[in-house]
Image (cartoon, rainbow, N blue to C red; front, side, top):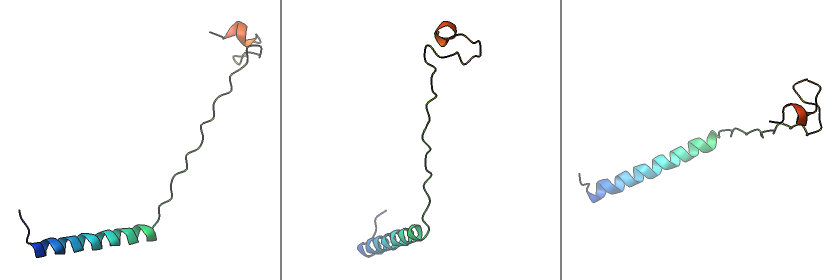
Length: 65
């Protein structure tokens, strides 16, 4: 439906005021951003280290599949 030029100007003014109200609200109520924790990579055993399975063998002779 068509709007008269006066109604259009009134709607633009209303939108502008609503946008300013929203901006003022969010400036007064800031949100804390969640800080992401870094992902720690698992340390892999070296080829000559004892196997983490507990067998007592070297990793390269036990679980190096």
